[in-house]
Image (cartoon, rainbow, N blue to C red; front, side, top):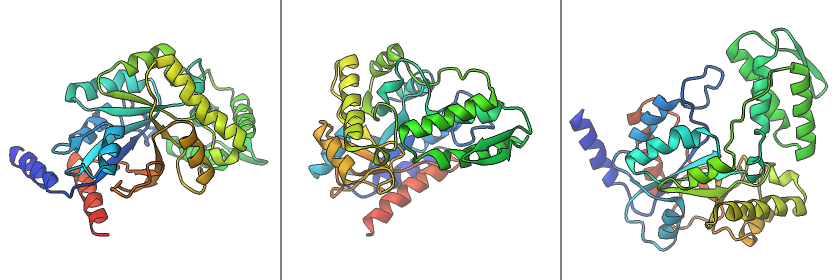
Length: 318
C-alpha cells in the first residue's frame, strides 16, 4: 500500500547517521528447494530487496570509507554475497541491476577451474544416498533417514563436525562420504573464470577475496593461511584486471575461524577491509578488518525492514 511505503521511507530516513548495515547472503535459488530451506529462492529474495526501500544502498568499500571519515550522513546498507555461486550471475545480478543496487561478491579463487564447496558436496551426497544406508562418519554409523528435513538435519550435523578440521583431513572425510553414498555427480555450482568475468562486468558489482579453498584459517599454519589469503587476491586481480579491496573470512566468526594472526595477514596482503560473520552494525569506530554483518531472516519485507531499523537503533543506544 502507498501509505505503508511512504511511512516506511519516512522512518528509515530518520535513522541515525554513521551506521552501515552490511548484509550477508549466500545462495539465492531460482526455485524453492525443500532440501535447502536455508537459501531463499528468487521470490523470497525479491521480498528481502523490498525491505531495503528507503535505505541508501552503497558499495561496501565506499560505505566503510565514508564511515571512517565520519561522512555517512544516515544509516546505509551494503549487500554482500559469499562464495561466488552461479546464481549470483544468473539470478542475483539481474535483480540488482534492475533496481540499481551495488553489491560485493566474495569468491574463493581455487574453485574457478572446477569443483564445488565441500559442504555442498556433502549435502548432495546425503541427499541422493539410498534410504536406510548406514553412513559411517567419524567412527559412528548412522542410518540415513528417509524424510527430507531429517536427512538435511543429519547432513548439517556432519558439516558442523567437519567444519573446523584441517583442509586435507576435511577433504578426505568428504570424499569418504561421497564414495559411500554413491550419489550421482554434483553439477558445478560455483562460477568458472568466464562466469566470474561476466559477473565482475555487471554494473555495481565488486569482487572480493574469500581465500583460495575456503579453509577455516585458524586450522591452517601461518604459511598456509598467508598463501590462501594473498594467493586469492593475486589470482583474482590477475584474472579480472581490477583492484580487489575487500575480504571475507571463511565461516567468519572471530575466535573460532579467525583471529589476530589472520587479521594481520589480510592487512599485509593488501586488502583495505575485511568482513566477518559476527552479528552487528558497523559504526565509525569499527575495525576495518573486523566488520560485522547481518542476515535477513524474517519472512516479510516489512519484518526485515523492522529488523534493520531495530539493529540501527540498538547500536545507537549503546
